[in-house]
Image 1 (cartoon, rainbow, N blue to C red):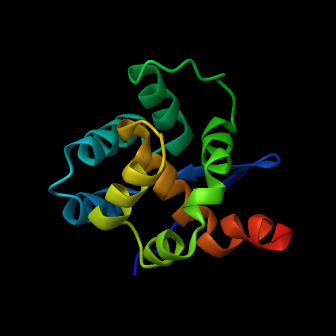
Image 2 (cartoon, rainbow, N blue to C red):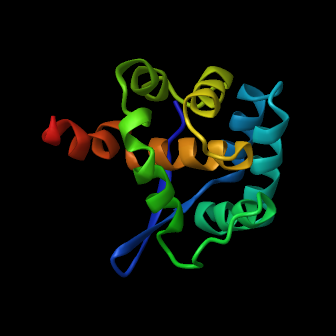
Length: 137
């Protein structure tokens, strides 16, 4: 099991991906070129998931408002789908090709951003991410 690191900065939690995590993700996603490209960008951003997501969004033709919580906002917009039972269960098992494929198929998240969204959910905790939706139901 990979241990994730979170670095607190004021009220915003900056998510950093370690080189060891990147290598594990690469091994798990060898047949997913868009995911591997996203992992390269994360590495180029010194593991900073938010910076990488913004760079990938720009490459995807989006115009993100460059702030510290853009990725969180993107993930939350799709929470109603990302937290459906089957996808949530897959996410709880960790990052995999099946998770990447399911998110890409079930949402309109650009393929370059699927991997950062999945990693964001894993790093913040699937249960914590889905809890606000479950409380509303």
